[in-house]
Amino acid sequence: MERELLACAIHSRQDYALITEHISIKGASYSKEFHVLLSKVGEYYGRDAEAEEVNPEVLVAQVAETVRNDKQ
Image 1: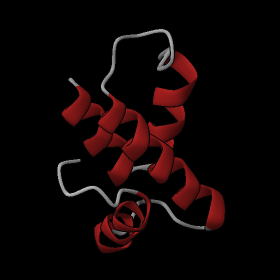
Image 2: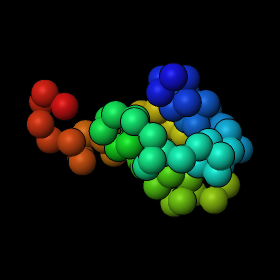
Image 3: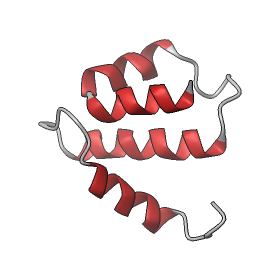
């Protein structure tokens, strides 16, 4: 389920807004990785008000800067 939610959030700002509005991410049992990635997607949309989808290359670079541990 996490994979599908992230795919939707990455491919559509509108889907990201629906996900964050209607799903209680903090109360649910989602993985730490899901929280990190969804947070980065939110930051991306927050920086670029015109973006309708996330550039995957930029997202990977953002995650690489945040997560320094190879195991993660």
